[in-house]
Amino acid sequence: MIIPYQEIQPDTLTELIEHFVLREGTEYGEQDVSLADKVAQVRAQLASGQVVIVYSELHESVNIVPKEQVSAENNSLIC
Image 1 (cartoon, rainbow, N blue to C red):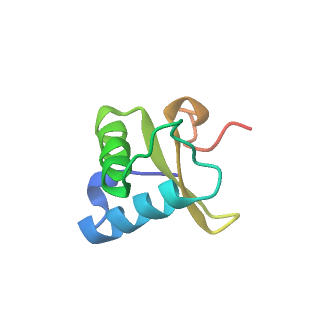
Image 2 (spheres, one colour):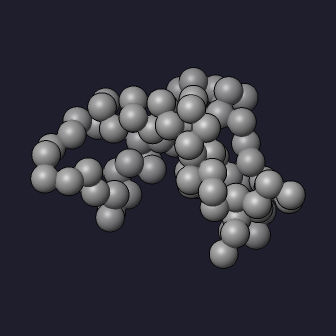
């Protein structure tokens, strides 16, 4: 299920984005990018619709994924 980012409390959204960008394997290239810059980049991607926040009842988890990975018909991840 897609969760509109606008419906998430600002502090909670920031924590969600920070958790996402701090996950092992999230790579930003050879340059060091500050946490604040990474969070701003993800916020911009949310605002532009490039990525969406998805809640999985099955896994009881929340994730940020590219919009292309979500089925428009049922708002679920395409595997």
